[in-house]
Length: 103
Image 1 (cartoon, rainbow, N blue to C red):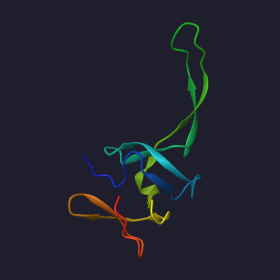
Image 2: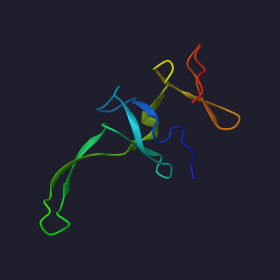
Image 3: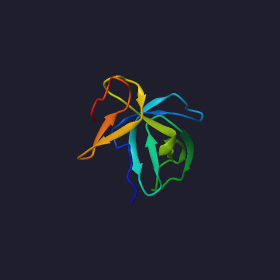
Image 4: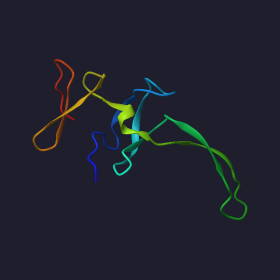
């Protein structure tokens, strides 16, 4: 199992792609695939069949997964996208100059 630098509930910023620069909250993390799902980012249209009698099918807007390397954690203190450092005990640290905030 791989270790991820982002966790569910973190705020991240997208670095590349059609949603470049957009910030959003991480909904789900998949360490085995090295992917994350971010709320409101990489939205795709999915065709859904009706599963029960009387239920309607149709088109549904759903967030799709994107690679974790395409996002960067946003520091809650300095409000900027930042690289993540680590201290003993698994504490994550903001690497921006003059910040050093712990997550």
